[in-house]
Length: 120
Image 1: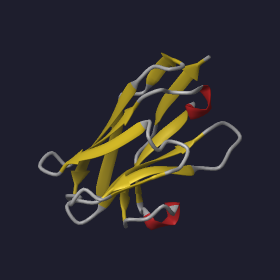
Image 2: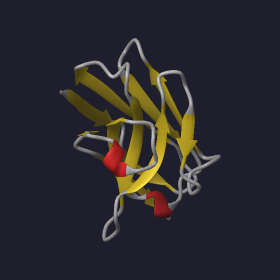
Image 3: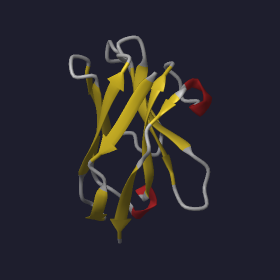
Image 4: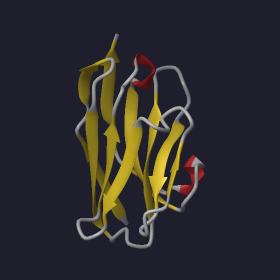
């Protein structure tokens, strides 16, 4: 089993920045892609970004150029640097671990989520 714990969410004004962190415990994630998904109120969960252990990345078009995903394999951690935040980025952000994919069902491990709120 893999346990994922997110941190770093909060309230920020439009145009601001936040960095989310996710620490994995239990089985290591050295063989898993790690990433982020989000769910806004009244909307379905959507893919945000993912990264392999070797550093390959995929980003959703809506965050490309604004968000940067990175990971520290030694610390079993993944990060999401979010810049130029927009009100439409408001959502609960979930850390995920699993297969390198944009599909939510490829990730069997999910954190509890951290709230990000962007005010206009």
